[in-house]
Amino acid sequence: MFTLAVSHLDAPMVIAHHLIWTAYGWWLPNDPRGSMSRTIASDVIAELGQLHYGRKRVQPSTRTLREFFDRAKDKLKFERVEFSPHDVKFIANAIGETIRSRVYTCYACAIMSDHVHLVIRKHRDTAEKMIGHFQEGSRLKLLDANVREPNHPVWGGPGWKVFLDSPDDIRRTIPYVQENPIKIRRSKQVWDFVKDYDGWPFHAGSRMRMR
Image (tube, rainbow, N blue to C red; front, side, top):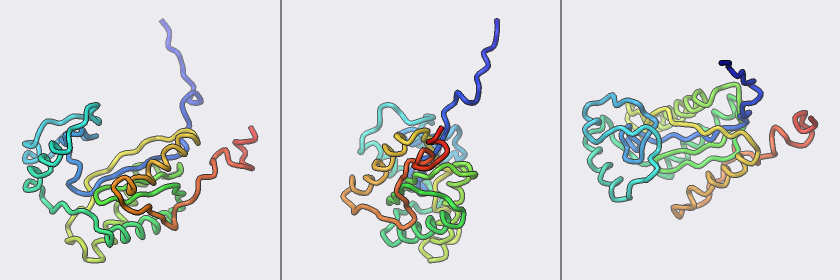
């Protein structure tokens, strides 16, 4: 018997993150689509159905999902609200401020009525910390604008991330994010804090490219 030592160099190098998080009440732990939750803290919410960790291979019908949301509506502690175009602007301003203050690099952003997508270059902050900063900044912006009650959580949990470990991964994810509004017949979103992807870290003139 022997143990094979695997060098950390064999592991993929994460160069960016696809970050996703949802508005409050739109993706509960026992959502019929599956979730990243391992426990259900509320007995009232637990009554809605069983927990399934991870996204289900076979997704529920629109009717099943709508029925779940209808049953959940009266069990939520706070009102479940969709983001209006006005709300989206506040959230975008907060995201832009966070990106500038923390020196993040963003390659794509879609702010939907019930969730957010971002493609963010790897940073000293972890993906979880970045989502936390974005959520806190945007929540405060909405509360300051009096478009949510002072104690409303706004966001529905810590969200999740997809590791992107190659330029091709980033190039595939950017249009996916950009097309989210278009798929529901809304206008393409253009934000001043989003930069064109230049192939980092293998862009022209980089030391990685010259290796």
